[in-house]
Length: 359
Length: 236
Image (cartoon, rainbow over all chains, first blue to last red; front, side, top):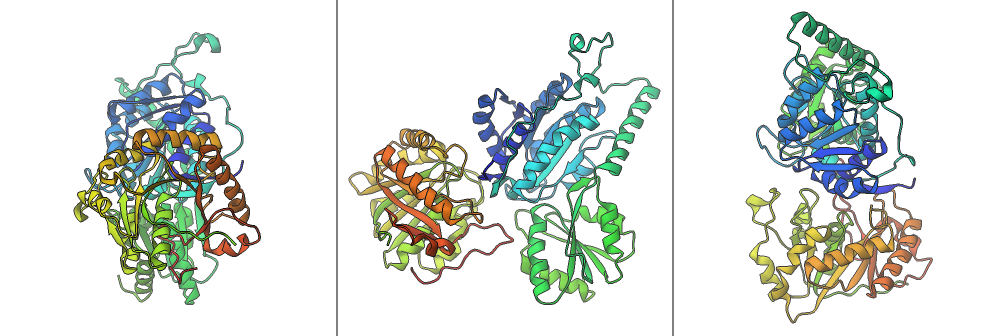
């Protein structure tokens, strides 16, 4: 298919349709409302459904209900809206149902602001819901990658019977880039017979699938959590993704950065290279599981004296970076939030200071 | 050679969401300003949270182009703020008064509120089209959004602006095909093709063929933070 010029939010909506998802429930919030605006028009064209819930709390449970009934389903929101959905996300994890959540992050805490942020890193990777609940989290750095990740999210959610989150900052949703989609709609059947509450006739089974997250027997609850842990361990083994940039040279400083922030870092790295200063970068594409090995290995290079995590937050991913580097070299953080995005020039200043041994 | 771009009076830029109105508005303001036409611009985008004319306020200010914006404390709010200064500038237009309107019929609703201010004056309402955007890749699609905008704006569209582009992936072929497409839309809509746009870097490749309309050279201003806006050089 020829390329089209799309806003990230529009492209995310189209990507879900191409992944065979015809059920979209959402509640508008800046800076992701264009997903709903696009799909309110597009879903009826492909026989799909867009239903606006009365709140994000309702939307979370609409996803739970649809997923429990075996439907491929997704929603999009932005930071405060995801907080409201987080209870349902924990229930969906506990009940082992698949669903896809897209968070186009804005500034926080609270209502924060409407400009780009990466302040929901902790929430997405560690604290999305109560209990031993985790999401597989992917972070796109371009509109094209957002499309690819949304399309990957549905089969991954079904593979693990677990919610998957695509975590983009506000820029991913709002910026326009040329983007290509696969020609055909993806229509692979899901493995819903394993969990779906309906379809007994079709699967010729006498055993009911129970969709539940309540397990009053402590042994059964422990077993359910062991099953969840086994899935999270399998994600760590099979789903880690990252991209390396400029790591062939003898860099003294390694940047770890994700999302659109990494593109600013890439520009800074190119500018530093022109000055004769080598800086490498690891860009995590999955945030959970975190690319510990890739970061650890890149930090272990003999020339590398410092690792800096550059984020549009007050220092969240830096904790995972430090856990990956394991004290081999100093790790520090640089970032801004509230919608101000560090410029290439600022990053150059930070990198030079770190190389000179200043924090 | 393409025709010379001449514009004065009040010009509203409308169009489908994401058709490139703001990039066109900024470049058109700078282009006409360089031709010694006094230019005033108003950011009437009440629907878009990012990438608005206000992002270019500094570059426009340096060139002496007056930009009417919502009050500074509300600049980053996603609230539909229509400052009274807009109707003021419409009642006393000088040179070129350019209004960058929000996308789709929703964004154009604001025009109906300005009908009194423009009564009895020379007003152009240009529809910006980009065939590489969803829903405006066909003539029917462009006419559909035209009708929807006219219904909400309560003003007729008086010209088409061809803004065929895929941003950095744009080629001369896209521009030539885009020119033909814009001409067809203008004919179907029974309005003139006001002008087309072309990135500065591709301008020389366009001289090979006679264009049936003026060309506005584009230097991209609305860029993400890892790119530099193109600098405005001397007029072409």
